[in-house]
Image (tube, rainbow, N blue to C red; front, side, top):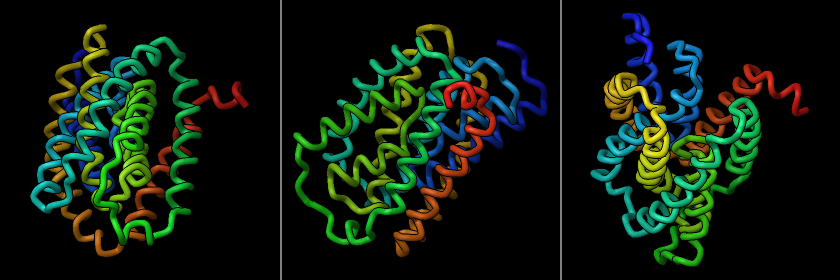
Length: 262
């Protein structure tokens, strides 16, 4: 791997902090932010190395950010595990196919998917958060987890912005719980994807360490903000969707494949 300058090292830590804060705050968007930050801000230009490295870093940060949510009592372990295990299988299979597809086309289609998910989240009624379903239905949770993992692995991301609505739909839990529980799946999916990329020699371990260092501090701050904002669930939905739309628009702007596909 190319040697990083002092500035690139600093920018890697700062980028990790941004990713960790996003994961802690909204439970998603971390890896989709990590990829453009590493490409455009830090200046590492191999997309496959970027995807493999950020997948592992986001995985570790997600597991670390899970701890404050766990202490706050937001984790429903049965639902989290039932969603994440089949999702990990889907993520590994998806990552195999994802490495075979042109990067620019994947990013373009991914940005479109981000906008669709964000719009659906904005249209969701707040009332679905008020009465969480105490029963976890495997026939509903497992297929959603499997398909979400496959999409996350295919695009080389943790998939938090997909996992949160997936948990809302399949378990009936509230938004703050879905955000907290999504971190377990983000970590599991990201680790599975990273293993696939590491096996192909597509992980920069030094960058991973820098991202983790920055992400630890950012995640603590983000989790505290998420807990405070849980009293205003609609506002948290708006923040979640706004971040996704902004990043998606930036990806479309930076991606020349959009012109060819359209």
